[in-house]
Length: 490
Image (cartoon, rainbow, N blue to C red):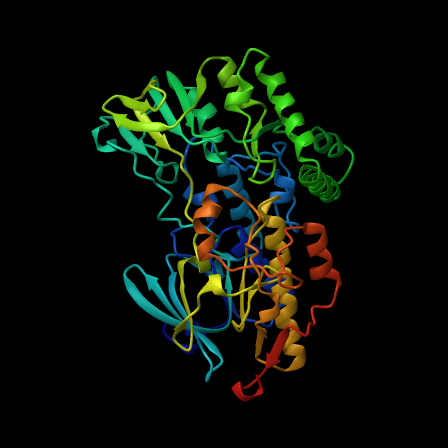
């Protein structure tokens, strides 16, 4: 970053994962006169799909909705493995010549909005060196969890365990689990993914869970997709399957919230059909919460259930007393022998991509601000963040957020102004949390996250059908947005 051209951009995007790549595509398409750069703190693109290397890593949403609206997913597998998703993202970058706009190993550590200059001033770490850059608009696309610090609770006496303890976020190819006894602590998406995959080579895998999670099996291949592709063009098939899945997701979420008991019984009946009447489904697969109070875990082709039926894996519902030299002691008095313990204990939420965001050197505290349409922050100028859906595919909302930001920047140009800022509406404040979920990582981290308001446009509906009208069809002009050129006009 030597000259002015290199040190200033109209738009800086943080993160080259799903959201950041979508941002690059949309800026190239809809804001062709704007200069932009995508700053990625790691040494490769892909975000989540480059970070996680544990066995079986895959999508927990179908690729017709996790894939981009503008790039069809053309493979048979609708539930795709991590390497295939990373390849898809790399193809997207290559096809749109985005690599020239991505700077790897550039981690944004701080961002200060300077009101006198109407610019964001960024400090960036590159291989131990600090560099500076400015931009007119800052767009955070780095996700919502820490890449360096997962949730790793301390278990009593864990230092006495003579085997290996590994968190899935730090998995590496040197871990040898063949013909070994494995204990996996956790019951979420990571645990139900890693257990059946490890069970293929391990002697036995025990999933130790404090409480059960809703688990639903779905085919990894969409038969309707395979059928339609025989007769229709790829893009037409992708469009039809994408909307089939969007509507199905919306409908099942609606039913789960409106009829939780009936939905719960239906899910449990499916599990009983998988495991048989003799299996204790009530103990091991019946949560205490309602469906979609937490995200439902997807099991492709019944792989978890098959590994249990084949006695390659088992589930223990109990609490951990302490670690021992050869395994784990449970409070029921039972013991789980293990050569390797995998702590699939979750993630840590990370607000504002871990960046120290300030306005005139005063720290922005996100938990004291409202989200505007789940994309902007009250009182923060020329700033947006991508936060996907938790009840559907992340990319659906990421795509919409990128489209909205493009429309907003173009509206600013049309108005001839350099700044846009959501007005801080004190009447919209309430006790509403950003996400109406009870998952452990949300409960632990919500104190760090922005709040949602008690009315539109400050309410975070998590509803794609509503959002698509707000972003693509309705005008984005709003009395809650302040447009200005100079500080005195604010």
